[in-house]
Length: 283
Image (cartoon, rainbow, N blue to C red; front, side, top):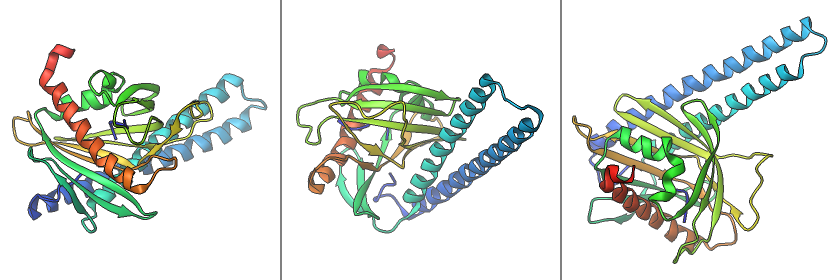
């Protein structure tokens, strides 16, 4: 139906909110330092290319391709980190959030209107899995997501940019009751591990070599993120916070979009719980 991997609970206590806000500020600061480092690296590479140009009248074609590939990789990493930083800043803002729904199992979805009059949604849930297990399912094995989530037709990793950043193409499944219809997504996804917490961020990107597919509307997600935090010392349970921020494109009433997106979050969480319950039987 909608991208699966794309929350701070309105019902949790103020001390928890204050703690989470502090953690998010720390994460944003770390990501900001990484971005600065990458920018400086890019400046150094640019300077080195100028020096190389002084020594060689004509650079070799293979050297040009190698430099361009490294620049592309650096750009993807920067885009992923920037998306995560912006998404964490959205979660850190306490004002404007309203409860959309509270489920009997404790899951809560809140929403707020951002500039441009679009709603974003955050879901908070507790899952019976460690942060590493969820990271494996949602990031490392993202191409297998269609096996347990019927709203996904397929996800393909187009580029593996180091261990923390990937570029993916996703196609949603055509399922009964899907009011939005099939969409495809081209996204950069970035991950960051910090002690007992894992951050997954992402946003839509453009690739000249991968134009919108015929028969699909190219939707755009992001900046979006998921925060996975160990709930207790045994780390077998995790607090799952998901900020869903999506422009589905097409000519659809906002009322339909705003009903469908939080429902997609609940559907995704239900499928994820089933996958976790199945455990190793699915590989």
